[in-house]
Length: 392
Image (cartoon, rainbow, N blue to C red):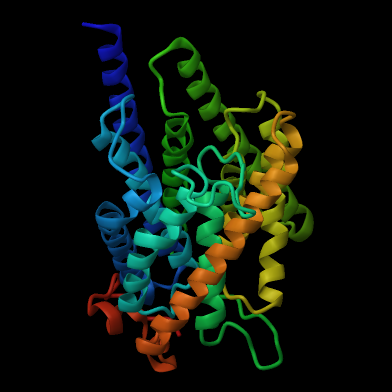
C-alpha cells in the first residue's frame, strides 16, 4: 500500500470517527434540555432536537455545503467523510437556540427557521471563516483564527438565540409584574448530567476532528494536545463555577457547575491546538466564571433563557475567540475582534430578519393557555410523563 493511500484511509476514518463523537452531542443537547424544562414540555423539546438534526442536515446537504465550501472536492480524505464531519456541526447552531426558547416555542416555525439556518445563514458564516471566503479583499474580510467554532458555531447560534428571545419573549410567569424573577426548577437532574457529559465527550470529536488529520506524528500529537486542552478547560470551568456558587450561596448547584464546564469547553474551542497545557486552565476558569455572572445579567434584561445558552455559548464564544488573540503571539487580537464583530452583525441581523418574517406568517410563541397546559399536549400529542401531574 502506498503511503499516500494509507494517509487517505486513516484521515478518512478519523473524520468519520470524529463525526460520530459530534453526533453524540445531539442526544447530549436533547437530554440536557429535557432535564432543564418542566415535565409538561419534555416531548416537545425532544421532538425539536430530532427535527433540528434532520432538517438542518438535509438543508446543508442540498444547499449549504456548496455555499460554505464552493464545491465537492477533497484530496486528503474522502469527500463524503468530510461532508459528514461538516454536517455534524450545522445542527449545533440551532440546538444552541432551541434550548433557550424552550417551553414557549412552537415546532413548525422553528423547523422553518432551521431550514434557513442550515441552508444559508450558517453556511455563509462558514464561507467567510473556514470556506471559500466570498468577501475576501473587501473591507469586511476577516482573518480570524477559530479552529472549531467558538464564533463560527457557538456565537452564531447565540446571536440567533438572542434575536429569537427578543421576538418571542419570555415564558409565561417567568417574570412577575413588579419585575421579580420567578424561579422555574429543572424537572430531571439526572438527565441534565447525562446530557452535559455527552456534550463533553462529543467535544473531543468537535475540536480534535477539526485539526483535520491524524496520519502523521505531528498531526497526531496536535490532535492529542487539542483534546487534552479541551478537557482541561472544561474541568476548570466546572470547578470555578462550583466555587463561585458556594461562595455566593453556600450551595453547590450541579446545573451551574455543568454549565460552567460547558462554558469552558466553548471558550477553548477557538484555539485548543495553539495553547500550552496550562493556558486552557485560565481560559476555562474565566469561561466558567462568565457563565455564573452572565446568567443574572440576562435575567435582569428579561431575556428568558431556560438552559443558560446565551451565557454558555454566546458569551464564551466571544471570550474564547478573543482569548486566542490575547494568549497566542502570532495571532492578531484585532483580527479576532473584527471576526467576532462581523459574524455578530451578520448572524444577529440575518437571524432577526428571518425570524421576524416567519413570525409574521406563523407565530413562534405558543399562547399562554398552551404554555400552561404544556407544549407536549399542544405540539406533540404525546406526553413524556403522562402519569405525572403537570406543573403550572
